[in-house]
Image (tube, rainbow, N blue to C red; front, side, top):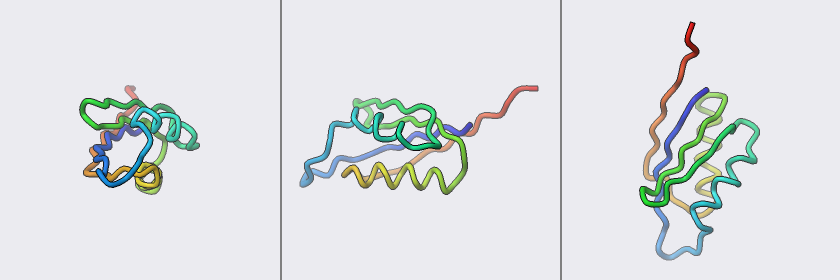
Length: 81
């Protein structure tokens, strides 16, 4: 399982959905198991299965929603033995 924090900017000239609506949009992706937003920090935390292609798909969906991705921070978790 991989966790990514996507930091977003709302372009002032665009009418974009509320940041909270991104949760539902991202949860529709097959690879996403969980998505939560923190509007105060303009960040979306996403847990997903996969690698770079899936992360790029998540970022693409965020951008297609009208937001700009300013940066992302990936953290992998490893099963304990």
